[in-house]
Image (cartoon, rainbow, N blue to C red):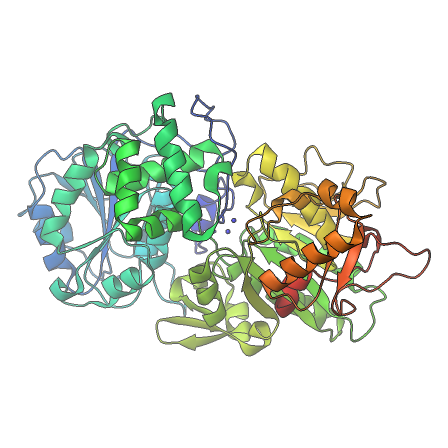
Length: 613
């Protein structure tokens, strides 16, 4: 449907080497039988067998830490890692001070120490702290012009290493440190907390965290332990390290959940891969302290706000700027030179980014295109279409404002050239914003874009089962120009569709469509007009000779959808009727006449997407 820090030493860039990219979208019809942990689903690495809680604070943090730790029992069954903004030039007494109120042992963190439950680890001054393979990893603090974000550094590593065993807590402090870290934890199925702003001496950090929409619980520090202890007893949490699956008796409840989600906005989640779907539904059940799926389905029927939250969790809106930077470099070297070769001066470079989430990918593409054009001295129009099913994510993309933590992913040179510093973060510069258009589009139900030089569909296919991949990959082929490029995520492939694509760069997942004899067929059955009646292509083909019947049906469909223009096609993509002015969208190619748009190399875009083009 839908990335990484940079600093000195063994930094957070290294933390993400194992992690495939993510984004938001859908999965294979759920079989409630068992599945392998090697299914390719992200987030399945074996973490510790207990929860690890990362707690971040800045100004006013000592009081908040004291309240939190004072309310914890001696053996809560989880580990705590505390990060506070400290003066790099002075020895810290934080561990000594907190040990007077805590019932658990408190240690100043040391590099390479294995994390154990019922222990608290406190960051030393002048360091960054992370967790890798269940052990603490300390690196020297780097001094640069960008903000020091030790809380984000810890929480992003915690999400990477501990997956759904990670808990993130943001307490009193100024700025927005920790906001990106909470997003990473939530994306991996972990649970997030923020201090109630009224109880915080300094509300900046809690406010930013809450405003991001990635906080599950908003509480005063002394009330957070009670919720943590209740969460630990839920099956989803208490069986950490195990694969918690739905049983065959959950079929009915699962179908109810799917139906409730479909009623919300027509999106069918029943084609997600099982591991992702199960993990995220179980997460919501744990947050509501519900153990049985049929009870959760009933809870959804009675609480529309929970439906919205589940919907948001399942969309997996996780992204960042320049995810896998080497792949973008490969794109500049191997795809862009061919795209601009022999191109007329006013012919725009057209790129589609389905599953763009909150816009980081679309803007990253715009930046690397503009850099490339500047290097070769060309001035071409650039049109990048970022689409997603989440209007909330698209609204963030259109605003183009991102937190300070993007400095971990974007080089100082790019920040200076393509961003404007604003309070609390960065605003995308005008040259980049003018190249990008964002619109809502359901990759699985809406007609595809076409005539694209590049389709960047990264980290979408990893969440789809075989049935959806069989529909989506031909659509991506259809969307490209004959010499356009397909750009996939590092864990994705075109396996099973080798007759459609040739490999340009196997490592970085760059492909070219083959001028194959195989028809670029789009499954007309998945595009359903909201008339209440669904017709397949074969039905229209049989009616072709009864022109008046087809004419009446076309009139009814066009009027029902308020479409000013369009075409009626059969299952072989052959045009049976033209409606309105279609020339802006479908222009006949030179040579032998054909009524099949998929055979016209320069076929125009689908009328439903006119306003996005």
